[in-house]
Length: 254
Image: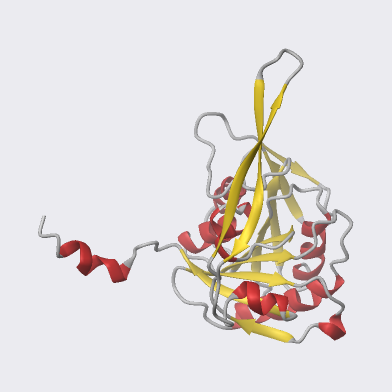
């Protein structure tokens, strides 16, 4: 039986332990093409490279798997991967494993999730995986356990047209995780502020900082469910139309 073709990328760069952990799992399931950024690209959202050449180099960093690092963003990596495959279409695109969670509105900023959204735009079932541990040397063993089962299910079952999955895994031992819950995106936002500083020449510069504030009152949203010890899966779509507002705007009678 022919193995499924899986395109792998991330936003932490090709040397990140998270993508190695992801490859170790999905490499047992399918044939891989890996196209990952040559440096960290966190927070790049759905950015693409249009004002500079995109450079790519084939590497043997991942052993037997065909792999490239790319000078662009995670979305660039997906686009380039699709191009490199020529007439072949991957059965699945996976992104991650991200170092840190990507819950709620973080999907708008996340390079990890934007790569998955790009996969959905390309008509390919796609999943972004994140572990709620920012430590570079995080233990991905528990994440790998759930990645394996979710990837197999995604290959065997329809996901829905134009849909990708946002999977977040809590930083807990396997025996403390209560299961997997499919839920909705929480209503949470960054309370931004800037740390204003001065360089040695007396010129001002700024570091973006702030805190992520949860305004969610329901108990069925990803942040709440994740805090209870569940792996969360949120189906994400790229159609950003506010469908409920269409009639409201029509009533303006422009």
